[in-house]
Amino acid sequence: MIKQRAQEIATSPVMANVTYQDTPVYIQSVSEEHDIARIFPLSDPQDEKEVNISSLVEH
Image 1: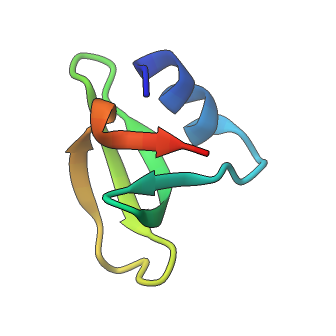
Image 2: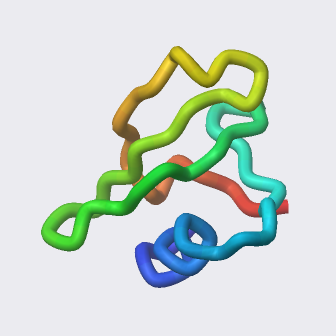
């Protein structure tokens, strides 16, 4: 995924179908300076992590 699309998804009120390592995730925010997104699995909102945007896949 590219940074611009990740930012669009993070700010959109519509849920996008995004996965990280085959796990459906929610993108909370995207770093302006780095290619990093803050995400959490839909099945476990407490498991927040920062990952490289290129590792996210939109379906």
